[in-house]
Image 1 (cartoon, rainbow, N blue to C red):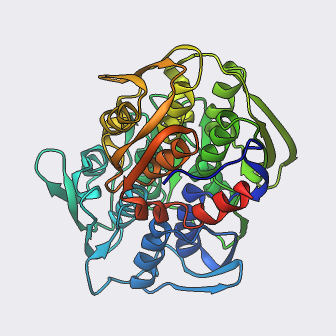
Image 2: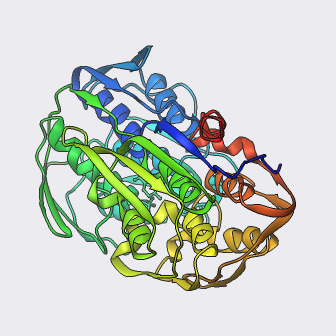
Length: 426
Ligand code: S3P
């Protein structure tokens, strides 16, 4: 590919598209609330479209008018049985959250996905949901998709300690618990993104959160809302890293969601000595403007409670580390092995093909830098974040060409990625 960049690097300003996690939840909560919700700035990517199509198939009317999405909510009791299996595409969030919701609905449904999603473990939701009395099963011992759900109107509340740090599991259980009479208590392994808890409160529901412990009473009734979706820091991450590693760059990213449970990458950039400035914080939707400049970087360690706060950014952070001086160690990140691909194996494979000194560990990666990147043939398969990481790596290749297979996966989360790239290269 080898982009033609002059010595000015990346310049200018872009507005970051809507947060994927918040977009899924806005549609789900809009559908199960009573009344018409308006979503401003919904991300219209392939993953979010899967969630939208699922609710349309269950009788929810959803209309798009420019930047606004109208969701004509049916309440918890108004969804209808779809007349076909529901296609969740590449989206783990769609499958896990919708499964939790439908476990307590009075009809049966089958959820399936693409080749990547079909390999991902669903036992992390089927086990606790089964404890609540749900009838839900997948394939083989990991409960891989397709998932068959025979909805049960009367589930029992549970007290459950989550064995993995996962916002998707937490959210699936909260969506079931909201429809279940009695008190459900969940204890997280580590704090994970709290968008579902925020959404429950925003839609007039109740949840008590104390550190890693949360309590919720069911049943609940939700009321329609107007939501302004902030930009996705996981999408902004590609430009944050590009700005830091492409010589001469100075870029501004507007509308970036900076919810504390998602800003691990900002902590890492600061620890590495990167120049990043956060201004214009908007408390209404927790968004801000970021300005990033090309920087001399030093290695760091990324582990523990920081991991869930940057889990989706670890591929692009590995590229960042490849340009830092010293040894960067990423550990406690075994969850990377069950994402859209085995991201420990794939990131190590792609970056080493491009000349990076990187070694895979069971629960992370060790990267020695700085490295000069060269071309090579790489395959992102069905993993959008690996495709975008490779596109950013392409900006600093000093010899040869990168050939990337699977770039179309980028539409999963960032359909306008190439438009924004062109804008910053002008
Ligand atoms: C998400 C949670 C994370 C993240 C995913 C989106 C969510 O997954 O990796 O991209 O919207 O809840 P896990 O909960 O499985 O860690």
